[in-house]
Length: 115
Image (tube, rainbow, N blue to C red):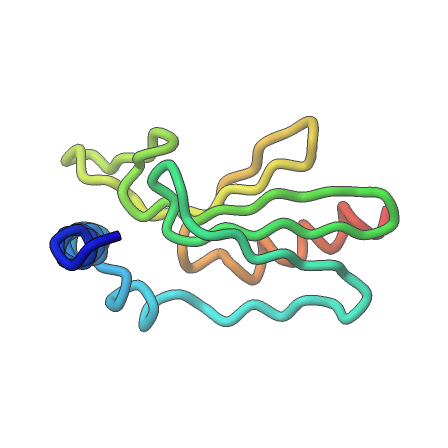
């Protein structure tokens, strides 16, 4: 990659960071408390998700992402403004949670993985 390609790549990455407000979301996202027995894989964001991770435990698999702008799903308020949400998929069902429901989501994931 030559200098111009590096500069173009840096400018493109900077623009994507600004469009998705990665630094702002870094301050707003909650801390997650994973059980020590879980295998957690952090996945780079793609397809509009701000964060992604998967959890494997006792043969069960859960995929989780955070969609801040309803780019992957459809969650809008009455004024048609996107509602940030978490979603997890357990291989059968999809479950969605508002940003302030992250603890409930983790409890529900824990219940799924342990039962």
